[in-house]
Image (tube, rainbow over all chains, first blue to last red; front, top):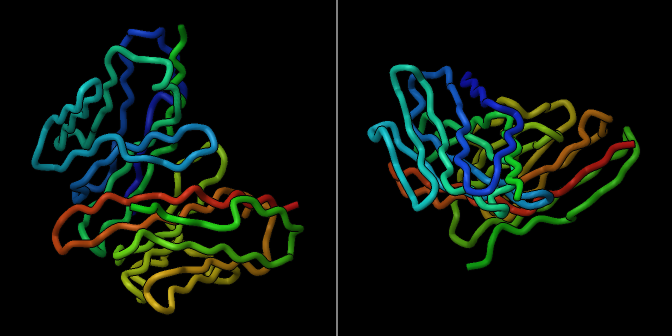
Length: 114
Length: 116
């Protein structure tokens, strides 16, 4: 089955700096890659996603890049703010509709310090 | 729109006892997922329903876990008997399922289970 590895497990940055989280996946058939943000004690919430026919996607301070050849995708957060502090999970899926199950990475705890 | 609802939010039981969790997905969402999230790890899919049918239960420990979605709306997940290693947050998620579209999965608040 699919295996998703995520690094680093913890990341501390100063407010205003950029943060980068990297994930690799094993199944070349995977074609959908969402990123979820989970604040302490709360539910995971989708912040951005990318499909395999796109190499990069940006939404304000957040961007995701995908390298299908290397089976690698990354989350980039610019101008970090204290409210960005949370655990971030990458995930991969190789289907739509009924085959849409997600395989998650192990998470990155991002701490934005003042 | 109302989000995914789950109950209870917290449950503490002793090992070998049984427990049940309930999930009400977003109205109109055909696909429902149960995930297990152990502390410090990402969610792991236990079972996926499409309406009232099981699509994927390959990672469900069927000797002790069961789930149903009889009318294609609400779902229950049961553990009987519970083991210490079942301590985790159990997340329910739902998605709309519109043919070939990628569907965002919306998560409920989860049920935190502690097995003593």
